[in-house]
Image (cartoon, rainbow, N blue to C red; front, side):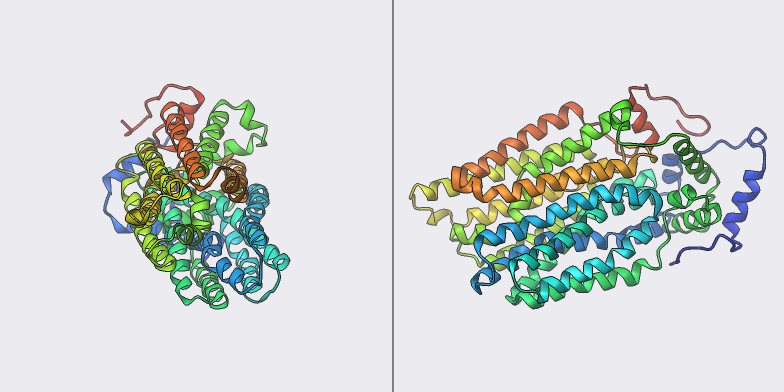
Length: 501
């Protein structure tokens, strides 16, 4: 492992880059190899992809923290209500305030990441994250708890922008989909961890248990490299070369890739990027429509309602299985499903996984809504008392299989590097705005429409999502980022020079 490298250090990889870059480009007969080809020819070489998986696994601990933050309310708020520390109405504010904080965090992160390194941003977040957990553990009263959740949400906003950006900037095309899925995988592992802590039935120890991961992340990520793209952006070529060499392995010739990064960064320097580019630039406009659409349908399937209110749903259903035990079992299955999606992302493709996931989630929501509808009519639902747990379990598995990871993967792939930070900022802000809206209005919709029709409404949105994906979403599996952006811009796929097919 490595910490950030000083630009004045003498490194073999750096020297190689310096020697090559002093030659006139017209005298260098070696064409830049296609990134996908390079990855294919050395597939299975741990010195190449191993460091990328290690760095991604460690940075994805921020996803673990995100999973803890969004699921904390499921085991804890029912305990706070039973102990008369909060009311039912205050619960909805405590649950949803995290989303409001995340909206602001996302918008701020887009600008901060233009001037501060991804590694520095994520390490700095450990301080407010720990403060928020300690406040949730020891503060009394709904106002202070809402303030703590707002602070948690602020950190979530920065995480949602910075972590996918870091992963996209260190990954090669052949493993980019799998690495992008790590973030969602660690989110569901964090959710499972919180559900397991819920067995303690003690709000204080559940919260303190969640806070430990902040310290673990800080201790491990401190030794990971900064993004080579960011280091190039701030004119630190030696540090960028050292970072890329560590990520690709000591035997890998980084010459061609570092030249590509420098060219892309230089192109970005020549143009001042603003939010207006999402309207004026065709590729960015189509990209933002696709990314926002995917996150819109991710939230409108009701995922956060299911997670936030899972214990409450099981209690309302009168399930014969303990709500705490049911959430743990479901969490385990969800982790396994997301782990499978890491493998499937670069095999089956993003489009298929999202379409299949949305369709399957719809069927689960229909069955869940039917159960509650029959129960509300006074029908005997004892013979199908297992249905709520089964429906929620399959729903979360299917969500983890595609609807969860695909929007994160696609968003990190369809924008050019110079606008990716602002794009992630805007898209994730909309994501959390929708999450805030859905979780806040769920109780009102439930009271107005009934639990069954509310879940049917979420099911209908899933089918709209299927249609959206079929019509607009491109397949990005294994394709260089520049090729994807060109397609969104309306350019025909061009043959690349040199060894690329």
